[in-house]
Structure formats: structure tokens, C-alpha cells
Image (cartoon, rainbow, N blue to C red; front, side, top):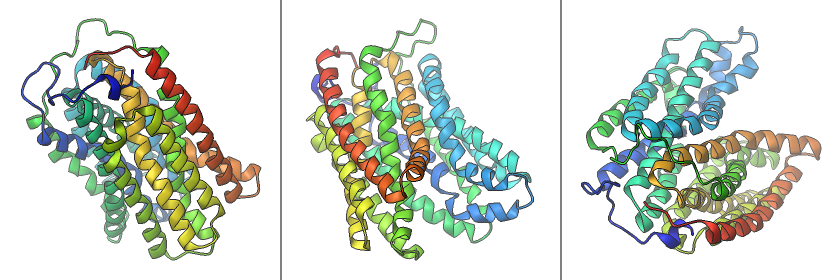
Length: 406
């Protein structure tokens, strides 16, 4: 059965039953979860300046966007490996080490004089982000159970959504002092590493020498597959909103920012409210999320005025806010402690690969049809179809999954 139906609310203790985990541990893990967002949006405002600074570099037009996008691709490709390391070596050790490494590789472009070297440093940023995301999500699942776990998974989406807005603004502000200046913000992981070393406790059930139990692939593949498609749908609003506004003649950055903020606020609100609906189970929450995303994307595809775009952004944002915690709860609900790190890593890989593929899929659809609007119509219709498919799979999953220990 799903996590909601087999796990009654329980005290937030680690699996060994030691001291109660509480707000201190949760806040550190939620803040550290925001670092993947830092890599995704911080540099967006300064990409043109980076391209100008390395104008003489062969392939600069291709390499410059990779400064922004390659960490997400690396997370998608390596988070599953990080999950195995988490289960084998332990959560805390990898988290603290990755937070320290993140600061060094994240700030490396402050001193690098070659664009290819900067892109290489961004690959390393993606590796550390994969470890950080996997550790944070796994520890949240270790520490908290039942309704508390639902609440913190929802708050993880709230924190990262708000962080995206803050980091985007910070990137623009710091970029006014030069394109290298925003890279200093990556050093924020050092105090987080210190905090993690002080307050995070390694759950004692980690099996460092025993053979790891296999994952329950029969019940785990469905949520991972739906998450891959969910990542694609989730990223449509983030990537395509400015192009939708440009298509109706809106080019003022202030207007684009306000509409984007409306969508982000809706995402945060839905994620915050997720625990109130989580008890209904993935068979309800996931189809509801896809329906909202699909309807919102269809509105964006047909929009011809700013108020209609705002409506589409808000509806899509509400769907996004439900989608991530619902998918995560579904995926981890039938995993044991010794399986959870690998399961979280595979889930993270699926989500980030879907996000990375999202603009490529929309671009391909736009080329195959007559532009962005028809492409969004296809994606919106596909999201509605996914609601039906995900609902069926979630019901089957709830009937076949075996109860598991926290």
C-alpha cells in the first residue's frame, strides 16, 4: 500500500529510536535542498555577459547555456549513483563532504579564465548537487514519518520555489558588479556544512558491510517512470512562460517577472497545502496535479492577453506544487531504510532528466508543428492523459505494494 495508507503519524525519530529529530534538522535539510535551485537559476541573468566575455572562444554560443544547464543534466545522470553511496557509506558523511565540495567547485569560475574550464567546473557542481539532493531527501524520509513526512516533503518544494525567486533576483543584482560576482554565492554551502556536521545525526541502521537489499522494482518502476514524465511537465512553466509572453507582445522584464512570480507563488502555496490532501493517497493527488498542470498549459497555449497568461501560470503552478511532493511520497512509500537512498537517487535522476529534456521536447514539437502554441497544446493534452495513466498505476501500486518498515 502507499505510504499514506500504511504509515500512521509517528514521532519523528531516526530509525534507531534515538533523540527526536525536529525543526533544527529539518531546516538544515530544507535549506541545503535549495542549493540545486541555486545552480539552476542564479546565473541566468548574466549569461549574455558570460558570452560576451568569451566571445572569441570556439563554440561560445553552445558552451554558454551549458554553464546554466549542465548541472541539472549531471544530477539526472549521477543521482542514482549517489543513492547507492548513501545506502552504502551513510547519509551524514556524504552530505557534509558534498556541501564543502560544492563551495569550492561552485566558486571556481571566480578564478578560471577559460570557458571550457568553467563548464567543467559546472559538471562538478552537478555531481555535488546530486549528492546533496539525495542525502537531504533521504534524511527527511528517515527522520519523519506519516503526516510529518508529507509536511516536510511539501515544505521542500516550498523552500526551493521561494529560493528560485530569491536566487534569480540575487543573480541579477550581483551581476551588476560583473558576471563573476554571482559565483560568490556558492560559498553559502560552507555554513550549511558546519550546521549539518553539528545537528544532523547519522541514522544507525546504515549497513556499511552487509549486502544491500534489492529494490522492489515491480512496484518502484511505475512511480519512477511517471516522475520522468512529471519532470518534463513541471519544467514547462519555468522555461516557456517568458516565450509565451513574448508571443503576445510582452517584452518588459518587469511584467515577465511579475507573471513568473505569480506562478511561483501558486507553486509554493500548493506545496504548503499538500499535507492536507496527502491522506487521500497518490491515486488522487498525482492525477489531480497532472490535471491542473495540463489545464494550465492549455490555457498558456491559447492565451492572447496578460490576464489569461497569469491564469494559466497560476493553474500550472498549483499543479507543480502538488506534483513534486506527491510523486516523491509515492516513490518512497514502499521502500525500507536500507533501500531509501538508492530509491531517492533514482527518483531524483528521473526528475532532473525530465526537466533537462523539457525544453528540448517542446522545441522539437514546435518545429514539428507550427510554433510554440501548438507544441504547448500537445504537452497540455499529454499531461491530462498522464493524469489517467498515473491514476491507474497508483491504484495498482497500492494494491500490490507490501507494507514496509520505516
